[in-house]
Length: 250
Image 1 (cartoon, helix red, strand yellow):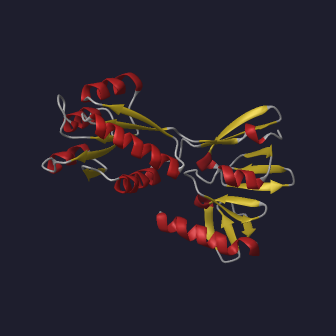
Image 2 (cartoon, helix red, strand yellow):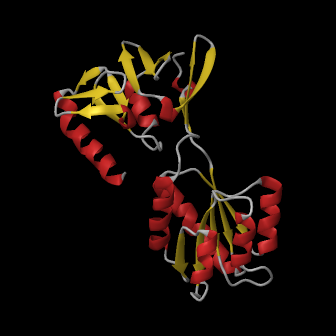
Image 3 (spheres, rainbow, N blue to C red):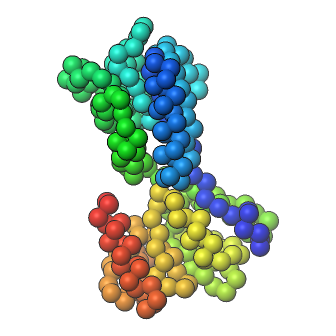
């Protein structure tokens, strides 16, 4: 296939819930989250609730949230009780409490919150916390999709060891499989720039997953499958900088 529109990375939609019985606070937090999502280049779906019962009903009908911004002091069922109910069946949702009260801190430990933010929360502080959450999120739901010889393929991004350019074709190397598609490595690099799995360009013909680099030297790398790839002079400084940044973040 020569049309790049048939190729791309499918990123998991991040489902965020905001629950606060103050209407203006809900609107404010939603606006902040949407601006943060745009800056981070993340695909976020934001749901807002002004009552705890409404939130729980949404979860019963459509499943849990990935991230939940939750006020503690609310009319009716409070944030702490909501989180206890959620934790009865789900320990994956990231709970971030936003409240003007801190007397609940000891009780919050049992529901394993990710963070506690003082109200009124600032956009800068909220972005810092969301960045940490997104950095920790698993990337197993990200897939690289492409078509070749009228067949469509979708491969988990974390299983791809490296891309190899061969003329107009690109080979996708997995541990035990090999795939092909028509395209440019520079286009693949652009598509994977915001993905959770980190790849680096080491030369014109190779774009590699850093998780499969067994050994790294100044002018070459050795991948887990044993292939020895030279780092071209053009990419050495950039590759070294990118790789060290990734190691520091991890």
